Image 1 (tube, rainbow, N blue to C red):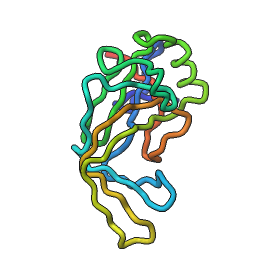
Image 2: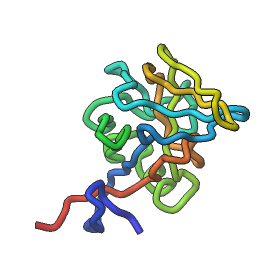
Image 3: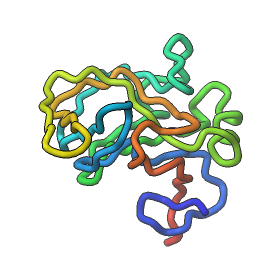
Image 4: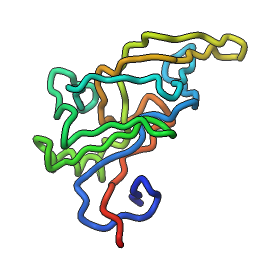
Length: 156
């Protein structure tokens, strides 16, 4: 079932896909040998940040603007894409709803981090990072990704 950010079932007809690319403060096993967690407020991004499919940076789908929006909420990094504003938007929408594209992923350059090695698995704590791109992917690196959702206008 598809839900909007409010958690209510959406109305039919949406062409927007959205979800959390990551949640603040929740560790994820993104690489062998260590887990990773982001602090709230740790991410910045350029005005022309690209949205890619499976991290294919040579062929970005769209850059930040009317069709692709990001926001850092109290919960995490929220992503919205209006598929009408994306070349091949129909294919993207179908792949998100019924096909292989089920999650979000980010590429970033950490500019501030520290390590906690007190547990069984070392934990990389990202305190500052610059996003390089956001991708819609088949499997998100952070298990805290809240899949691809369909965001639609709520009934009055």
